[in-house]
Length: 329
Image (cartoon, rainbow, N blue to C red; front, side):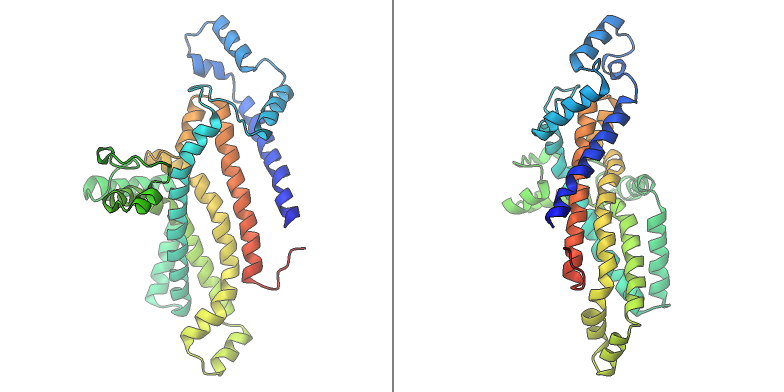
């Protein structure tokens, strides 16, 4: 386990190098920051103040030294420390991603189990068509359809945003849902859920279809094993055979898919947050790219990459709990 934790260091180092090189190849950011009417003298002065005249290895070394000490620099646009700005947005992305993951996992696993148990039934055919639509539909397109139907035509849910500002809710942290539950403000919680449900379902659609298909195929393969036939021969109820004997082994590949999907959901949040005006890391990264705010882009990418690597580590550990035959040494 210690060796796996140490592997996080070279991975993050590689990510930081790639991101830094890509951003330095995108052109002169002073043109974006100062605008097209800036004089060459103003551009030269800004380049000098931002350290862009130094060789790229000097710029990267300075960035790496600061990052090791927990300092990712300041936003070129707002001059706010990047760490503060990213961490202020991160809870919004976490709540959206976690809800999308919960929806996709619960719905995907339940649908997959029912489809496997009732193979070739109308539910099986209908659910697999739905799963195929889910994995085939782009997030941005699905988000626009949801807004068109549920917000603009039916008026059931808000078009965008995080909360109705007229409610005057001022939580101490960015975890709005958690704060509303902790303080027992159920009217606030209802409004928060109305705002989050559309982006969460749009974000979860792809993973939901993938988990459902994976659960179905894995369970079908498992229930044909000899030990499952033996359990049936003992006279056990079909529900006990499926849920107690077959499902545990069938869920091992599903755990991998769910873990990897967390990274997909984090990256997919960029599009979802942009469409629904969600104030998370994704929309922050998009704004930073549009404004050529390199330190802020690096901070967003590094944070998402670190979470993705740590989630994969948790998936590896969960593997060992799900299947005792797997040992890490």
